[in-house]
Image (cartoon, rainbow, N blue to C red):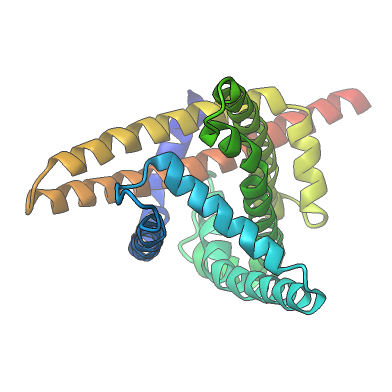
Length: 299
């Protein structure tokens, strides 16, 4: 509870934490809504291939998406195409990682300073960019590459489950449900595992001068269960609140629907500002406890 209060106080101590994320989340919402609209239009067009003309179910839409991913993977069998694709992904990761680092290296530094009551630095955002840009850039590139790999692996991994669910042969549906549950759990915990380690690597950049990944891994390894339970609880809270807000937005009619969208944007901004600050606060708490333990062992 102390870490929660400390995180909230840090956010209000440095308003840039909220303002920066508010702009980023607003831009992301506009961009993602445009992409989703284009994807939905494409899936709707693909679904009209059927003879009955009925709208696709969620499972049908997901199956179309999976088939598209499989077609893309089949397209990559050509060595030249595969090489160009890998080069494109690397170039995208490097460029996009640099763009993210330009803002988040300063943002994370502001968060780190805001958690310290005794230190107040109004220029922490700019100083963070100057000092930590390259180190945050490296983590961003690795994070983007891991995310793309996870996305591709997950798309392929769900194929057997979706195939069984769509099978009309008696008895296959039950196996499809079981396989879906197992696949979902494996992907969920695998994704959660790597997200925790990468997330703790960011505050490690500001805590140690060398090897932030190794230091973050060592810290997480010794406290993994406690961190996992906290992250899962925060995630459940986020998805539950977002689901309720989405239902509220869908139930409202213009012009009130705009107000619901703004409310959702405010919640997402405040939540991610808190979640980021909480991860940094938790890292500093575990880091201090780890240092105290080492002092006791050497004394």
